[in-house]
Amino acid sequence: MKKLFAFVLLATSFTRPLIAAQPMRHPGSWITQEGCDRIRKNVTAGRDPWKTAWAALEKSEASPDYRPNGDTEVKNSYAIQNDGHAAWVLAVKWIASGDRKYADGSIRILDAWSAKKSVPDDTLRTGLGATQMINAAEIIRYANKGTAGWPPVGVEKFESFCHEKLLPVIRRNGGGGWGTPCLSALVAMGVYCNDPEIYQLGHDMVMENRRETEPGCGKSCLREYVFDNGQNGDSYRDQGHSMGALAHLAEAAETCANQGDMSIWTAYDNLLLRGYEYVAKYNLGEEVEFIPYTDCNGKQKTSISPEGRVSSGGSFSPMFEIAYSRFRQMGLESPYTKKVRDGYAPEKTNSDNCGMGTLIFTLDEPTH
Image 1 (spheres, helix red, strand yellow):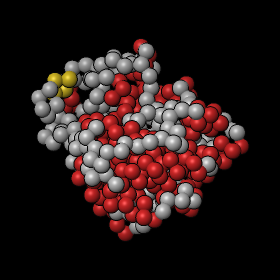
Image 2 (image 1 turned 45 degrees about the vertical axis):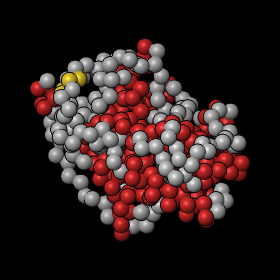
Image 3 (image 1 turned 180 degrees about the horizontal axis):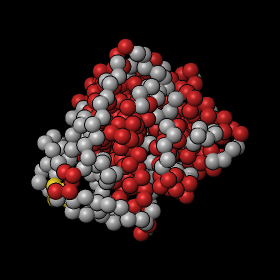
């Protein structure tokens, strides 16, 4: 148990970004306009891997006539997650194809939720739905010079929905994987709503220097979830949750990077890189170090869990291209992340994460 406290404390100092002094970049959460142009150009040209990724996506997931939840007061926690996912997939389909029917389908979902009187009081499911829904809204509102055609009244109503309904739930955060989607949602909300205070709140929550062994582990942050050796707060539980929550941290990091702030990607001596390499290596069938510990609630976590391990029949979450492409741009080697990325493309989607990485994040040319 004492080994955990033998981790070397990485004394990294951070300069708090002066976001309030800078206008938000749009589209500027998971996808920039440059990214939108790259996706459309390569799909139109029939170039792989975009061609294959688009062919797989086009025939799956949400259709343009997708019907969102019709309740005015939503009790089913999965409703916002499922509808948020559909809105996001349809927004990406619009970017890839240029077909307005996909944008119209996404707008229908966003408008339906803007009219809700309540959202589920559930940081996990509401966080998962919010981050994908907000990223859809960012694309629909700003990409391609606003040609998705979302009426201004819809744009404004969704902003109010973010502030009045989503924010009170997701700002509560939550421990471990219950809070990581909230972190992704907060920075995305700050961007979409042009609200530097919300953006800064999400960024600062991610960057808190706190461990799972210390008081306050009821709220997620990067260093609470990912340990210095790369293991994470769900490594002891199963590999599906281990990958999914790590991906939310990468999503938050990417939103901030697209706002010109690389601090989450580089935090604590590239801690996200170590987290990705650890989970990739273990799920590819190799052994990794697991350091036993006792969390702040007194729960003992003694070994890594093989449940859901990909080398034993599990499946990789669609979360590796977002990190691999960013690591390349940073000039960082990530051999295990690359091995997953190369061997399991094209990435699919799921309702937990950004997904579709082969289509969205693959770079035209190597940067190093």
